[in-house]
Image: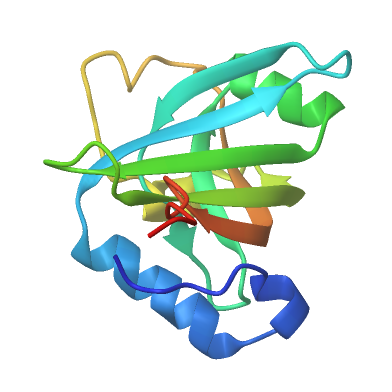
Length: 145
């Protein structure tokens, strides 16, 4: 896996952001978004890779479910990405929610997947924007090697 800086926001490096964007554009895999409510009770849900925005944030399209409700109480989340065909290759993103929109036209621009039932009238969706606070490899290298 490519070497990614551990603290993108501290360095403020546009290169770090572009490296992450390139990583997600060139790797397939499974993503899990982890959130917690105000009391710290955790939730994990499958999510597609993040959208990299021009302002340096990342965004996810979210349904009005537990992950989104948790972010209303606790703005911190982690996204874990496991590369296809591996058990140990991938990345962890630690993020802070900055804002969201429920504008259907804006959300539609970023929807990647459409499944049966997606077009239910009145179904609430959000485009939620995050700042990446820190990145880490999926599995830390063994210090003995």
